[in-house]
Length: 218
Image 1 (tube, rainbow, N blue to C red):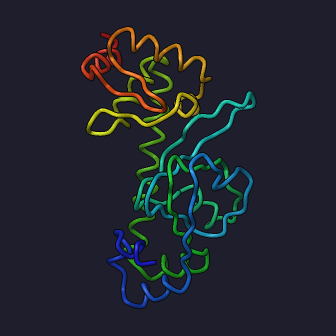
Image 2: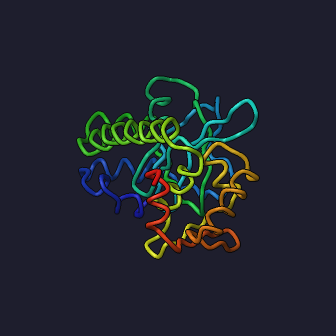
């Protein structure tokens, strides 16, 4: 697992820790929009994203999805760690947003690494802190923003440096916890206002300042 060792904090581990990691860690390829973990599943280890991105989401009784947080390269899933350390079933759903490579560190190996490697202890604490802030940000957005403001915020936060957001309307709907039809209507309004331009599975920002003003209620 040379790709995993190249990521912080694994490159900071001791030689013995790296040797243990090589013996235990296994790679896993995750195709886009395919389930990685499901609610109620028993977790067998710690999941670290090597490349791509995972989306952790909840599912409402009416079938609507709502994103809880994303896991980017070098990051791990705190829900999985909590399930692992406390012998709990996984409390949400996980899918890959794009072609994603994940390293699975078996539970026994991760516990041993956690007990003796300061770098692993650090990444675990930082992952928990990051999750708290991300969940608080999502809750604040849900309670204070209208849906069109949340959409504008999603576009600005997740668009590339060139102003391109590669998400389908269904993916956006799942992230916002609404339906594709509602998202399609909101996007048409943004297009009519000259804020974005649409393409197949992509949105391009035309007026970032306008989107920012919309978020601010101006």
